[in-house]
Length: 294
Image 1 (cartoon, rainbow, N blue to C red):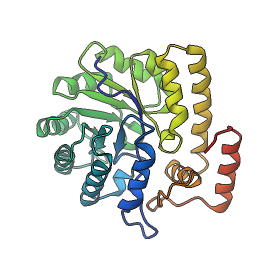
Image 2: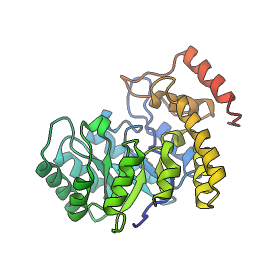
Image 3: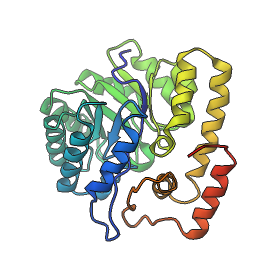
């Protein structure tokens, strides 16, 4: 196993204005908030509203984030789409802008054969000189990456996995398949940091870390120090924080928490909506029960 990425990696939010336009200035506010608190950024993913943006918007976002980060921390760009052509073009642009790696979900919407999926990733791998990760997100794509398919993706040059199956058993099966190879395993949820760390993962792409990165970092640090008692306690604490994101859509709640923290992070893009005043009051009340200093 080769851990190319380590630490806490938020799937960074993208800011939009009141009219739903990409808001670069406010997106840079989010970058400034995160860049000294986390170990890398994952952009254009689910929380980053990648599926809600066109290619031009994604390229503007990649450029803006890269300029703001200016090499301080690595950037992983989620380039996946339903189209091989668009996926490859965005990946090439991400590499040009200095991305450390690109990640892609399997091509979605249509029911694809294994041959089509392997062809999609083969073109992506051959188009760039930076590592390509497969992003396993069966809930949104419509079908899962299997250990057998993961082995074949490795054989054509894919060099890592972001797993958002939300199953420690599935993650274990992936590690059992490729854990002895030159391959990086990143857990795609803060809910499974402790078991994933035990299996060799050293990085987490955490939605909670978009707005509350500090507790997730503390959890990972406890794992690194081998303090299992503290790690178990913090894992439970982070699971509680994760529940906050279910007050409304997770993207909208993450924007709201940043607002509470004094960060002008703009608005989510429709059909997502900002929290109502009632939801915002509930969020503030529940945050207070965790004793966090924001």
